[in-house]
Image (cartoon, rainbow, N blue to C red; front, side, top):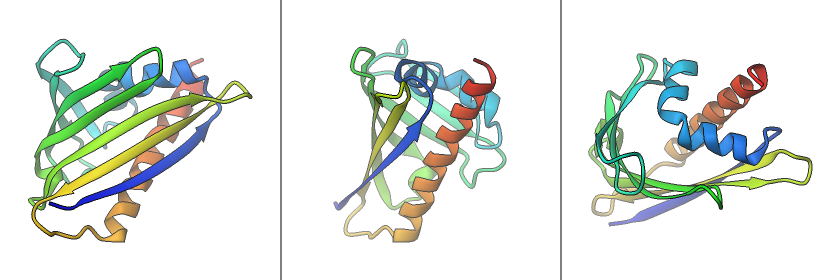
Length: 156
């Protein structure tokens, strides 16, 4: 198995606690509301939303994928961190064992924040992931965070 890691840092004018609430705590209902073309719905299969919870994400009509099952690995509301792993679904494209995400929302001096996202792709065997696919993932993360930011600004 090969692991490929990439990091994305996205600045935002939204206060860190508000961004964490939207991106992590309210994401299951907020993202389908503001980006239904990307994510149609999220349902909890096991757990209460905390560590160990297993969810299935049903992607929207604008996505090339149908669904993904993910597990909450860690959540820390004080330090504004969240980790989860996609463990099943066509988003793994048959070439990945899993994808692990580590999210950290860092407050900035101007009252906004920086959204830090580390993605770790665990491939099956010696499969290579193209730079194009990694760039695609980064762009989708950026689009989602900017859509959440715009929603929060419009509904402040």
